[in-house]
Length: 447
Ligand SMILES: [Zn+2]
Image (cartoon, rainbow, N blue to C red):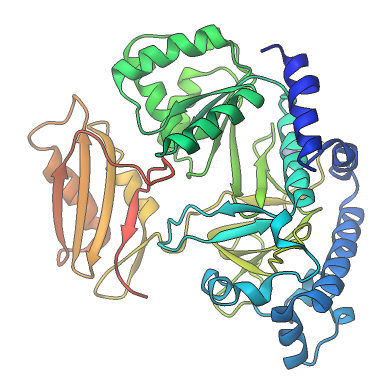
């Protein structure tokens, strides 16, 4: 489909009919990013005051919290004041859902978004149309950094729904959004060649999707000697999974265009987006993003903290100091790209992503990912089923030899010690999550 048709005759009218017209927000958001930081903070604080005032009157859950703490909406005017309020965990949302909801919103007009459930807990979030439109406008603001516009053709490396009704729904959505979908469940040599022919004919402007799915596709393209640069992509946007150095190495090898890291969630939309200078800019004009230590105090720049989000555009189901489950570092760095939104250092993965040893040591699974990302290993996944046991699933690559396993085991033991029992299992493919994502590490230990 031509870009003009996709944008003006399909995307915009449909968004308008759904009450999710992005146009009223695009210019405002576009301008916000170039404002001096104190003005960006002012915009954010005004949104925060408005939200707090509203939910104090309309959310029983928050009304009770304010009253119990003897707080008034006027006491919360900026990010620092926010620290007077408690954080909000996924469990608390699950247990207080009805009281949390904004009484002023008609629930039948709300849209539902589901979290991936990688923490073992699936949550359904309610969003009003306006919040979704703003999230969408934020997305286009970021994509514009790479000249990607509404209507540009996208190849989407993503999950495919299991039921035919949902598959049909996604198919229509893909058509409307001018994109084709490559199943993250089906990345193999033969399927990738077929998909490549489809992509070539489609002439996409950019790739978007799960890091491991795009990586898998590149792996087979490289093997088949296919040059992806002939696609002339504007960018490759990787999301939902952490990009490790071996991913980036492959992408830089396969593409001349920018490789972009996106950090977002289905609950909040984009939280941070990588600019052309390689910095992750926070969407601070429409959310408060805090980085907290174990005592819920702000960490210093450069220190690792739990990421906690206050979504300033979601009124229907307010998320104040929401524990999103990721770790990251705030940064004081200034970027020369022109965008003045503050910067964070790349997300460190979820706090459940730590391997625990009997001695009480915590080893980040990412560290072991580097260990396992041997040339001989095509894909892998680790499970900690017990404090004394780690099992590793491996998909061998052609260079896997008889002594590879003992080399890997030795590397793992350097970090984990000699007491832990390590078992290897060999598969043809690592099963993906329901969403299509590959999780490298699953801990079955209780807190
Ligand atoms: Zn920048």
